[in-house]
Length: 375
Image (cartoon, rainbow, N blue to C red; front, side, top):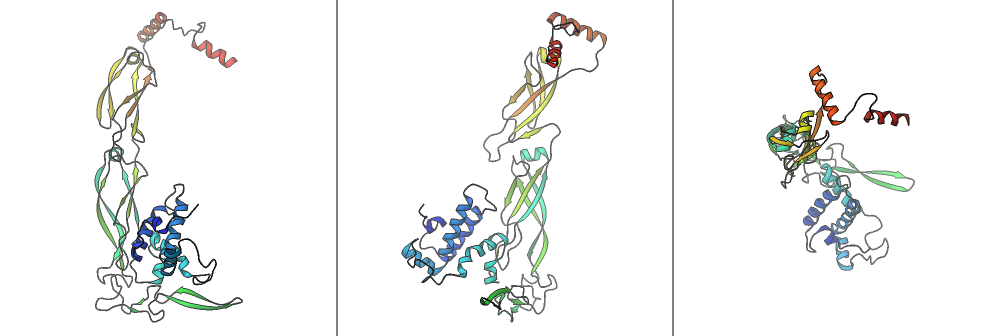
């Protein structure tokens, strides 16, 4: 199958700037990353996006692609800068930067803005709160830039200095002789821990980290119809960004308690309602509770136990506001456990008039059961 145009893959124009390319890549990589998107084809889509970004994010590769397209004029490892290029891992580094708030790009530029980490909060809801929604205020602990030092980590009146060991790069080259020759490895600077900065006088509030944990109160509007295990994204309410980067997001996961009477399946609600033998035989009207209030239900004469009645639009509102589910009422005929002699006599007379015999000599239900067990 022919490859798609790289600009089309990222959804950008051929005149897109480097920042526009990176922004498009980050958006798509979040959407189709296999760890997040479990849909069929997401993995292949993610590889296609990464391949497009690897080419278009490199000026020389982009220029070559603009001239020749997917065809490599060098047909091999020559001419394009050699067989190995660290740029080949550029997309991989950006994945770490996108999903884990740091990584390869941060190691190249320790002062680059980074998005704060995402947070998760579990909110417990009562059965009806999940059905009708609610407004609530929650309090979450999250890391933010220190107000005392404005996130620099340095004591007020002082400033961080460029690390003299790594020259502010956050990493140092370590040479090692091997049987295959001399290998140069890039490692995180142990003096500045990859920040590229040295703090001579640390802030008394954050002790040089530039970050403090604060409790933040957030008002939430829980939509009607949420179910147990579903989550809601609150943009920008995660941990604060680093070096001026944007905040992460907050994901609120709902934990819904069970109800002792109602049982939910999707947007429908099921209940069991007891009725007497007389109500089932003669018919009646009964009051049935629903989450929307009490409703009158007509029981036809001759109703059998286990019969289900459907109450339209008495279930759960659809989460996206398009209609309401139904309530299903299952009737259970309750047989009295204690009868006085008069009541027993009435039932015997009833059995006689209807031809229902229950004595041992009758050719009734129990005789058929005995024959069934005897084979």
